View 1 (cartoon, one colour):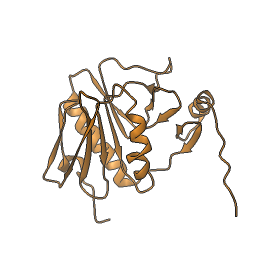
View 2 (cartoon, rainbow, N blue to C red):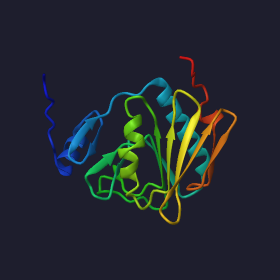
View 3 (cartoon, rainbow, N blue to C red):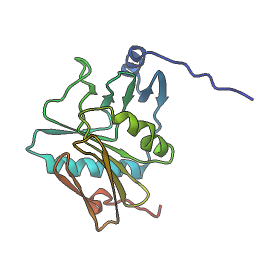
Length: 191
């Protein structure tokens, strides 16, 4: 039986390597986890979400950021690449490179079989440490379902799930509405 050796690195070592790498990796408490390629459905859903939010937020002081933008959590030992991030107001960056955001208002993760448990569990728990984060969405790619977590004024999170192409979901953090028919436009659930 073979055991896998885990090498722990510091946040500075992670950033130095990540900024030189052609591939992306997330960082969680000293462990670097390479990110795998995404499926056509996953990429299509991310593109549709981005297009919808960019259109609705046009003219407002908000930026919709694709998955190339890292998010750093307050303790500096967690760095993630959300599928879609929205920042409203002045963005705050980790350093002068401006490649790591500190103050997302909305984070969206499109679920895949390999990441779903992590996105629902440890990753969401880590994101909750961001004072700026007001809303977290989990978006299925194999059926039209969006799950929404909204932070209330008392710090607790409420949960809502919306299913079906005929339905829509209001995003209070950015005052937008996502029509599931637009989010899943040209996504083939049968393939």
